[in-house]
Image (cartoon, one colour):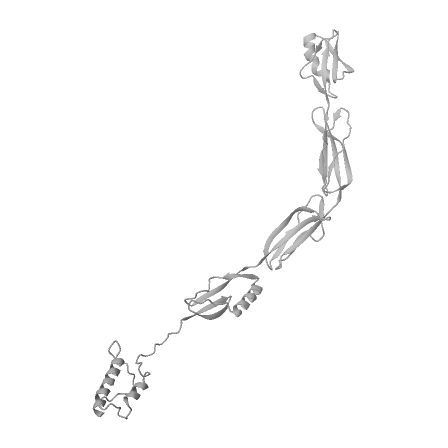
Length: 337
């Protein structure tokens, strides 16, 4: 049997040498690996060759086991104001906002009167270290002011505006003709609350007086005020119409003027126009002469206007026949021979 030990030992040693070389020609035996004595088929310490093979890799499998590299990991940092909250995620994984960051957002909103509106970038499918910053905007709320009378009727359009939460506001209540604003609501002011502010300003109707002036037209076309009267206990905000008076030779306007009663200073002026009549002239024989401009206002001297015109044609004087007016309002003048 000894004659076979040496060839067998040499064969086994050759196999082990072939497996020990890498592609670059270097030995793969680590420092301290056993060296086989191919001459004797045994190690110097007497260890059999079979035992030497089992000391490295399992018998019959000389290939080294492959080593699996760990998956890369990255850090996603959530920034809220001055605070930073990092989390670690695997490559291509999505990050989750930590509870500490959410708590910091709530504190920041309360301290700065702002609202969180989102992050400046996404944090999904992470492939590198990433910093994500919280974005905030000023928190706002609406201010609405209604203007109503004592019965709840809307007197004018409501005031609407938006203010930052915590900001002061001041709005003057408008003047509404015929009404008086409630005491203490001449100006609506305060600090904007988180849920918005709605205010109702109530206006009450007041009694007031107004004046009616009566103006009468004169011969020369001017007007003079004949009467002035004051009407009391009129409700502000209502429309009133003047009542006509009677003035001889004059006619009141139709319709009569109206006005809305204000709290004070309302004046209604009524202008009465002077009536006109037609003037005709006739000779003793009954012939009439009518001039295109023979229309006179009541109270005017008709003869003075036409005496020179007709006297030049007829050589006669004209006398006014007082009270001689026909149904058509024609005033007749007859010549005197």
